[in-house]
Amino acid sequence: MTPKHGGRSRGSMSIFIVLGLCCFCYLLGSWQKSGFGKGDSIAMRVSKVAELADCDVKTDLDFEPHHKFVGTFESREVIVKKYKACDVKYKDYTPCQEQDRAMKFPRENMIYRERHCPPQEEKLRCLIPAPVGYTTPFPWPKSRDYAYYANVPYKHLTVEKAGQHWVEYEGNVLKFPGGGTMFPQGADAYIDELASVIPIKDGTIRTAIDTGCGVASWGAYMLKRNVLAMSFAPRDNHEAQVQFALERGVPAVIGVLGSISLPYPSRAFDMAQCSRCLIPWGTDDGTSLMEVDRVLRPGGYWVLSGPPYNWKTYHKVWKRTPEDCKAEQRKIEERAEQLCWEKKYEKGDIAIFRKKINAESCKRKPQNFCETQDPDDVWYKKMETCVTPFPEVSSSSEVAGGKLEKFPARLFATPPRIAKGLVTGVTEESYQEDNAKWKKHVKAYKSLNRLVGSARYRNIMDMNAGLGGFAAAIDSPKVWVMNVVPNIADNTLGAIYERGLIGIYHDWCEGFSTYPRTYDLIHANHLFSMYQDKCEYEDILLEMDRILRPEGVVIFRDAVDPLIKVKQIARGMRWDLKLVDHEDGPFVPEKILIAVKQYWVAGEMNSTSSNR
Image 1 (cartoon, one colour):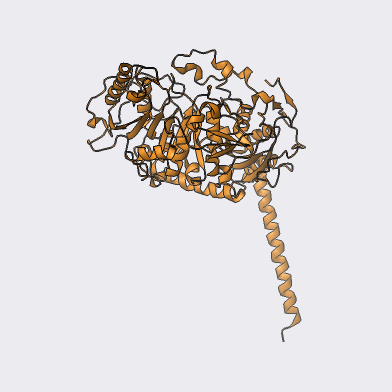
Image 2: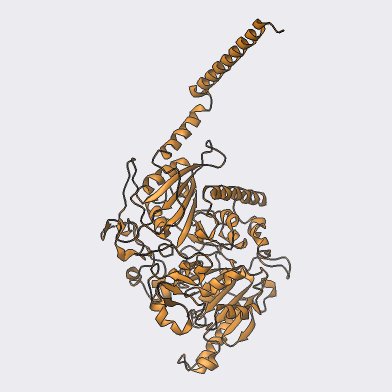
């Protein structure tokens, strides 16, 4: 039998051990906080996070669409400024393409249709209202064919283009039958004809550009062939054509081929097309075709459907002489040959040209090469009447600039620009590390919001895209991502296009070339750290609110200090907010702030007609 006093001794010993550990922990904690350990820096980080994580940041956000007014968001924290609703007349406001300002500029070379942004003192500092009756758009793929009339209440094209089946009005919806000026039998039949010449089906063609896109039915129907088309059209008398495209869930921007270079890198697109886009390919000095050549990849295709082709049939309808039409066609084909393009097909209204893979295979060598050293440095740069030279090759069979994998292998293969060391500070190893990082980040986003990656957020924008890792990680037929590379960031957009993704250059101190309510989810990775000394956070956030749809989501990933400033402004913008730690834990200085834009429409807030 065990003596009783032995058990008592062991119990006393346990108490002494516990007390000793407690004392040790207390002394260790005191030493850390004394300034000799890491306690001070950790305490500073925690205190900054505490500023963000106050009790009135919502602990749970509702990501489901409800299409109704959800009430005023109140905060016990002092709001820097509570933003009012703009007058309803601004519901389709496009800051840099407004008609009144545009008419002050010359019409030659479409200059008046280019970007003309308001000066700082004329910027709107109010919230753009949604029209009464606004409803979350149809999910993809139904949105390709239908849109709610209340969201884009314009009937002009239903009348003007009625015989061409651009868009039809049926009850409370707009229907897009897939027609177009040059494809009255539908976009599918038109694309099938192109595919008889161009390898559209096997992943060779992934990125395309549609110059003068109308309602972007060509781009919409190319999506089911796994081709991403960057469609653009001006804001002109064909009201809301780009707005229709984005409402349908199709990539598009407001733009024009005028006097300023297109905001895309060289060798970006596998294919370019003009379907009666009214660009004067044969009557200008060749500048427009040279700009298409700059953005067209070696081995890429250019499709021209419409005038002057098939002039024998239509010259009387066009009110032109046969001689005039024939001369224009001859001029286009001469310029194409000078650019090292070869005509591969001509039938009816359609002509297809293919750009040679390198300069060695050219029959006629162009003489007027561009002198600029960087054909990707194009933001607000005037187009020049010169030819962008092919990158050098070591053999006649080598693709200038590097051969690309077919899609989808292209998505994670190392882009040639990176493999050749042409992207500053990026190696093949760091590129793969970036991919792994963004797969991890997107997994974390999906754990926070199960709808990320679903058709609920069809139109996505990455405001500071880097190498395109976010877009690649979230890639799915259900979504598409506009990868924006700020003009003050390292120029990575060429590598993004080489991954089979699309994007655009932009300066976030200005308005983006889109209509209000055109994106479901906006991702801002260290954007505000980048712009902290460049322009006002307020202007960037109000622009984000303009282009974000009601009940849309913003994901900010940034350092604590910029997020504190962002949060203070966003509290006055009718956004619900939630702070989340980095997926690796609370001591990582990078944090995540999630915002959900509340649903409200014109007339449901105090509005003012004097909001400047």
